[in-house]
Image 1: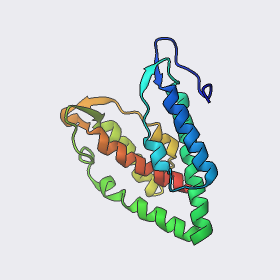
Image 2: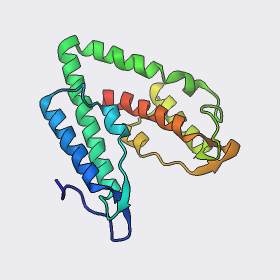
Image 3: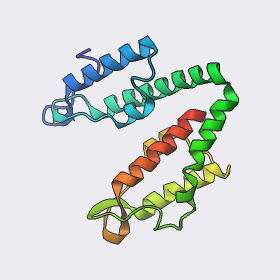
Image 4: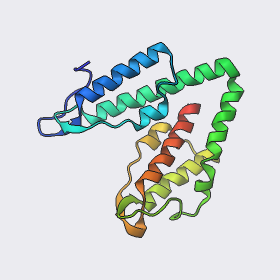
Length: 181
């Protein structure tokens, strides 16, 4: 698998190839075995690799991780639906989606804890939160790729939200969107 991803340019950082190769080999084995308890879409979404010079290009690895996350979620959904039915799946997704509402109802500028130091620009995050609220109100369309690909400007102090809470929240949004896509 060592040629699975393109390498970064000579003096450019990338993901450590050995870690990436090992991760994808393990993921492939788990997926083929059907043992979904060993790895899930959240585990795929939160994996991290060391960064080294001449490593694998992050964009290529991240795109593969996105596809892997979708594959694991689709397999989990198929197994769940086969066992408990489509309505039970949708009920579970609805329950997860309702955990997102309280933050969406907060006023702009108060949706997440403020950053201690640098963080995500509140205006940028709130704009995405408004789109998410619009999606749940059936006013607008939104895909998991759009949420995953969101980029926020950097800000400091009272103009910024802390990154960890925003990232965790958006990961749950992605999970809900993937569950119905």
